[in-house]
Length: 163
Image (cartoon, rainbow, N blue to C red; front, top):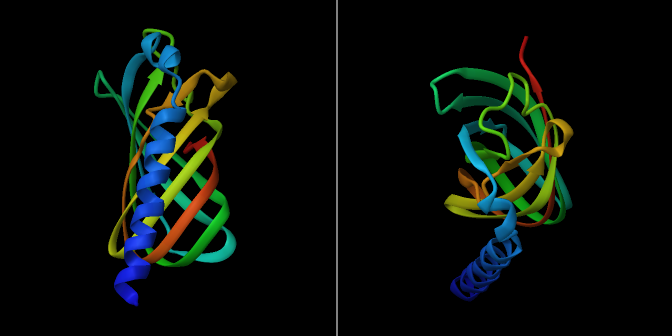
């Protein structure tokens, strides 16, 4: 029984990853410049069936080596069942200009999200936004977490620079 449930969850998650990848507009990617990498540590989370919320501590490292710290939250609305001990998410940061100013990742990012964990887990988040909605986080984030969880839905992430 457990193996069937786990296999079904993996199938649902794989379908979500394919849908997230397909949802990424190709034209937006062709006109963007890689700015660096945003890495966020997530707090523990308890899925509340229809949503969850986690605190974030993030660091943006530009292609030139400059770093900037951010704090924020990420919430999901949709199916969210289980408990995780937190983890790490990382995105490639893209923008339509050659460089982005300090604090450009402040603001709200919205998109699709999916996670699955049975022990160690993985996740994907397709998000766009930031200052004047000019920044996109590469279509699929890499996420590692520990726990038992299945989450599919819409994600909303808010970031603000650390002073």
